[in-house]
Image (cartoon, rainbow over all chains, first blue to last red; front, side, top):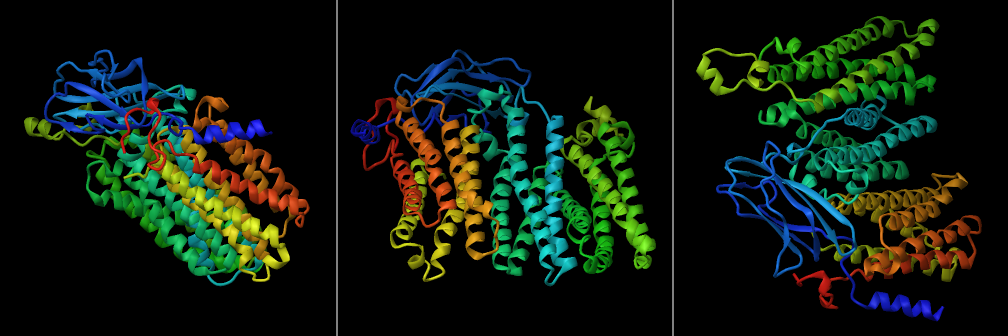
Amino acid sequence: MRRLGVLILLALALPGTAWAHATLEQTSPKIGQRLAVSPRMVTLTFDQSVRVLSNGIQVFDAKGRIVSGPPRASLSDPRVIVAPLRRLPKGAYTVRWATISNDSHVGRGVFTFGVRVKAPPINQAYGASGPTTSEHIVRWLYFVSLALLTGGLGFRLLVLRGPLAPATERRFYRVTGIGVVAALEVGIVAFLLRAEDALQLPFTAFLYGDLSPFAHTTRLGQAFVAMELGFAVVAALLFLAWLTGRGGLLWLAFVLSLGLGSGLSLASHQSDDRGWLPSFADWVHLSAATLWIGGLLSLGLVVWNDRQLRRTAFWRFSEIAGPLVALVVAAGVYMSFKRFPAPHDLWDVGYGQLLLVKLGLVSLALSWGAFHHLVVRPRLDRPAVARHLPRSLAGEATVAVAILLLAAILVDSKPPAKPSNTVLQGSGSALPSAVVRK
Amino acid sequence: MQPPSEHVHWLFATGILFLGLLLLSEAIVGRDVWRRRPWRAYLWPSLLFGLGVFMWPVMVFFTNSTVHMLAHSAWAQTMMVAGAAELGLVSGKLRGEWWKLAVPVAFAVSGAAFLIHEANPWFYARSAFVHHVCGWTLLVGALFPLGAAFKPRSWVFNTGFALVFVAVAVALYTSRDVAPIFGHLNTSAGVAHR
């Protein structure tokens, strides 16, 4: 026992190596830097000494040719490794690095820079891939969790209002609680999958991959940071609202979660280079859709067992569903105009074809909603109608959740490119974007 | 601009130490005396919940490796869940006996996260040693809140529960590779940069 105590004291008192493995502190060229002239070498500075691997620094041009020489440790500082570069012509470059730190972990990372051009985002580094099917599914789950959270909160505050029966209140907190936990967890998975696309590492190596350039220099990474922090606060607000019964906290959680949806819009293709209005339209589209679909889900999951409340809830939800759907459609039509340089892109390009399928499903859901509003609502007191309505609502909600899946694939996909100005000027006519891309 | 990781460890060590001292006070004076003022019952669960919320910035800003990010996320979530469950129990909003297991489960998950994200043996380096100390302290220490869940007035279980937090806090304070108060002594850590 005494020996163990001495060992522990010794281990804690004597100096040790850094907490965990080496962290990349500085790079030259800087991550995402645009350089006016070709750099002579790439320099990586870590927070502790590192050993150089044979592929410790590899610099690729846009075509995947290696333009760097063998890496070596700096003679003056064991924390620094360098690799010489040949004279680089104008273009985008990708640096992939790997080192062994004192704790024997192999750390890996990737970043980009440009010579006389803007550096590409890290998810467009040479060798990066994706989005994959897993990413489509994860983004869909993200939309569903947002619908449960934001839509659930909106439904509680705008449709149900006032105090609820304890059982209904419990169901509300369960649904929104699942939504906020899912938003946090799915957000982490989505970020890791996208980072893995850029790093292109096997699983065990990916565990020690450096995610910092991805988290801090890409729009998706910045959205991840903001949304994880925001949803952690929303989770705390939701819990405190449940604990204290203060409705004001629910309003705070609702406004915050509604605002956090903008993270997805800012990280999507809508904000590529088309100004703030498409991003805003995308956020309106997403927010209205989550309120609509989340409301539908809440109607079934939270309210339907409460016989006294469901009639009122159905009536009130029908009233706000109309304006929400109008917002979804208006913002969607605007974005379609912005996305499609030529109308025939809708059927010529895969992105357009997918959008047509989504529009078909949206039309089905709208018709279903109109049927509920115009036919079912006036007859709600009839026992036969009340008996069959839950199945009909579940059908409408299923179509709505399927729309979210298509939306997830569309958000992950690249819309048709805008026609090139030079081609337009030269030819004097608007070529189809598909031809321009070729 | 990020603070050095050791400063973050010290901040959390302070919070965890304070939490441990609150629990130790309760164990020494007894639950009945401690809860004569009802707000005292909310102190340590609120602090645990708050520490969980404040762990999220650490998770998203210290992304130098995937495994560390995931470990921080696990600690953030377990602290929030355990704190929330205790607050629910204290306030009477939660009545299920099973919720008393939230803290021992949180200890076990947090300890496992310490051990899983450390790939090296005990004496490889200070960081490895401290990770193992924290991991095993929490894993073995989970027995104390587990015992307290079944025997809430047991002095041994309650004191042991408090001392687990104190031990973890002390271990976290030893994260001080380039700490100015101890100097930069290890040559393998490279040139001092602060």
